[in-house]
Length: 469
Image 1 (cartoon, rainbow, N blue to C red):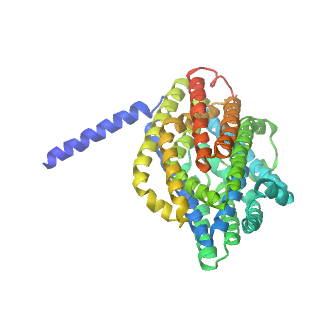
Image 2 (spheres, rainbow, N blue to C red):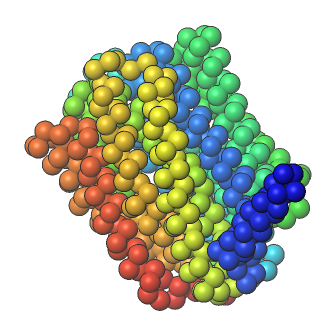
Image 3 (cartoon, rainbow, N blue to C red):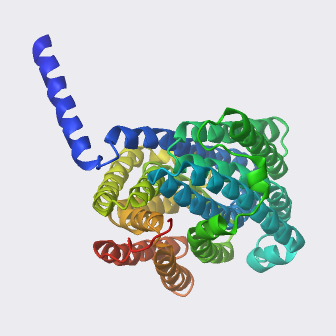
């Protein structure tokens, strides 16, 4: 019996190794490298999104007005931080391609420019939001209840002050991913996000500071993350070889390469998340309960996205390094594998989360009248994700790593504004579907995007770009 069991395990191991070798290995990248890259990113995503889930549940104890205010402002924060992440992703692609071509000197110089550029951009965005805080909030959320609006003003100010620290930390983490060093990137993420959770527990649950406590916590946590990032780059790193002098001198050629990827992606994020922000105004018009329901729905959906978000980030590094070596066949193979793997992950997450859904919703202590709508929206969205999300997000992330940034950005923007924004308003308000109408429009947008990107990746224009010499 023991011998039979050992033979079965051996067969399973051999079969698994064969499949991994066939689908997750290339000419210069072995599946063990891909898995070593993916595991820390998965843990990082699980912590980040799990922490967002936990924080939403935590702030819900401060009342409906608090959770509504945090949800509204976080939609604006998401717009700003994704611009910073977009520029940092430009650095990831450039660093990854230089790493693929084995040009260590340019890996170091690209890291210095990325780590300098992202916090400077963060400072500029923060100053704009501080100067125009009230007009922006009135324009977007003027119809919100008075207590919700008051909490929003406090939370936005606190959030904005943390942007430069977030930019420095994000620039460092993205460059580490570019060279495949995901373990220190994970360590920096854990330091930042675990401290954020602990401080939220202290300030919200113990001191009862509400949204002010959350704002103070995010500043301390991101400041700690930035300090640790600088310490790592200057004292502990043996790969990126970061130097302050290089970061203080702007290198126009390297910045141009970073911005070639980063700016179209940033423009995409501005209009993409700007569209999401606009749909948030529809939700505000639907009332405070709709805002609360949307916050809970999105927190649960983000949990479903953990494995696929991991795959999307892995794709940027792997495809970037393949294209640095001009290995187009390997790039095609990895894109196909990543899309299929992402879809399988969504199916597994759907099967796991569906029976746990009542308990997940209960964590947020929502009003009884919105629970059926929350369940309905989560299930409809979760069923659609395996079929359309992977094609519409994994492929553009991959072709962007190959230098095809403009096409992916234009397609994403057009689909966002014509389908999710206009379609969401049409279904939610005139057709009277309410909150679920916005999510149906989002699924329709994913479907159209997936068809366009699938057609693009089957051609040869996406890899015709030469980002590095």
